[in-house]
Length: 177
Image (tube, rainbow, N blue to C red):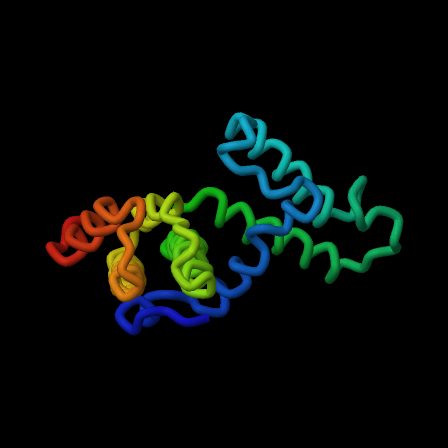
């Protein structure tokens, strides 16, 4: 997993990698519930927690009755703990993985716009950048948004959310966190 050098020295990178792999496990059964789905956050959290318990326990869950040994049971408990850490978002590692998830969405937005040759403006995803919290990750995101500005300038088009993206870039440049 790649991280800015100033941040990487403070992170447990293998743990972040594990968290990144585990954090969306529940979605394989629950689905990717987004705010537009109209499901209250509490209900989303309940569904995901129930699903993680199902996926990671040997009693009553996916692994029930499979003659699990203690090592497999402990692995399930460990996976659930990593998922819970991500959901609680209180550790530096959890905040980093949350930021990576958001940055990846911004990167996808820019990549899809480029692939479309400027035919499709996906600026509705720009506000995701504002939810990135770590300074180093905000700087990376500002770089991506600068590249987006250059791309659209190059195709000679004005895009939605350009003012919002510019405000984000400027706040990062000023060091507003």
